[in-house]
Image 1 (spheres, rainbow, N blue to C red):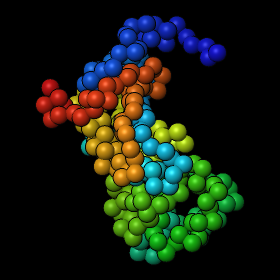
Image 2 (image 1 turned 90 degrees about the vertical axis):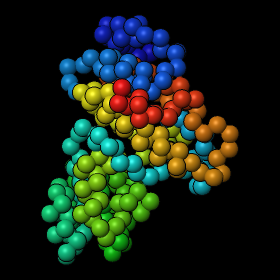
Image 3 (image 1 turned 60 degrees about the vertical axis):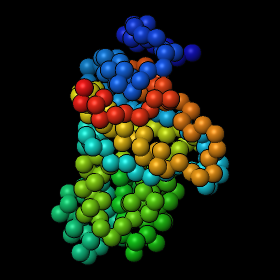
Image 4 (image 1 turned 120 degrees about the vertical axis):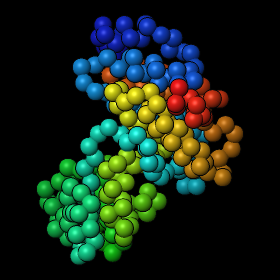
Length: 239
């Protein structure tokens, strides 16, 4: 059994953990429950009605958070020539071609959060599949991380674009900001994620799509969201 501290027990006892909240109520609660001494991240976890064992039901992509993530994103770019110059000018943290591939292979260098590659270098980057794949760092056209427009991709990920993918049981975990964010910022990001997941619903998915949803902070307990009321209206964000 996991041991929890007095602070966590007090937080759990301060609200009804089984109640289903509207998104606005959930955001208010999760901000209140984020009482650690650092700026906790806020994450949305959604259980989807899909079977990830079937290739056509894997839900994967990227979503741009209008209020950003609140954290510094380290971007590595596999590119050469003009594309490499464009990546550096756009603020990429690490840029390289064969040399970057060799560095990852020999030094296990993984000091980055997102990897972007130009199509011509994917043959080289493919050699890193066993290293980057399990960590969710492998560039993929479906997530916009294999592209010739590396400058645009770098800017988007630096400003709040995040990747998402169903895990083996159909859950999607997406950060939507920090506890220090305003209510309207977290709600705007929440809506962006729900809109994107709705858009990405597989045609082969049958039955209820949004099975459950929970908001939580890094050190706080989860707050359940009513999946019958996942949509966030403009007036809710502005209120």
